[in-house]
Image 1: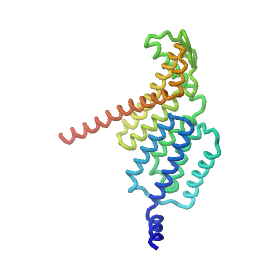
Image 2: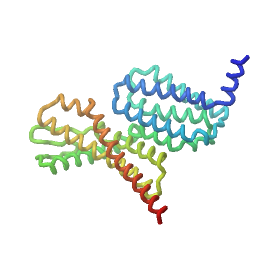
Image 3: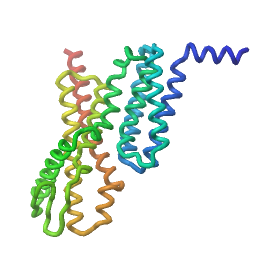
Image 4: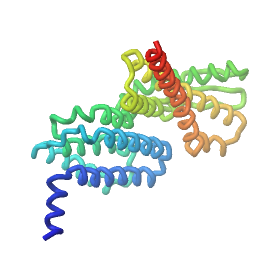
Length: 286
């Protein structure tokens, strides 16, 4: 009897418990799939995004309206089950792993709060969407960005004293060259940094000017750091060090550049917070 009453209390009075169980399971599934796919860059970004979003939801859990209808709950469960079935039957994930967090997040939000309550998770869903946006844009956008990346990389090499020649997306040095393909355009890095910018604005609300400035800085940092990576790989190819090229192109070296981008953006955000706190102290003293 006591066990039955306890279960009833949990089901009726603590929907947060079951949402926590479902959400934790979905996060674990996504991170496990990314880990098995060997995508270190996506794994680190996904882990950071999931951790930050979980913290934000936890902080505002008492203010959330957890009222869902039959249709919205059915749709939410359907999205999750379709995604799980697809992930179980796939042998090569490709861009699917990038879209999975948004699908999971949208499905869980529908189960928790229905159609009317989706606005409570707008920022979090936009953040998860930015993981996938680089896979959704048309090829001509990626190609245009690739051209700009090649130009900036060539400029960096020229500015640091290298004899560099640029032809379209090809960057030439006297002893070697690289072709900047779509994977090195910087679009993925930019989208991930924009997701971090949204997370920062969710945790530390800013004025309208800073709401524009923060995403611009995030995108710029992601783009410039990626261009520096392309410049470095061009130098490595010119010196015929292909093992080092593989390390910086698809190995842990590419992850280090992502860390550098996050650290630079984190420093910028820290300066914003310090400035705001200093203004608040001065206003209290005046």
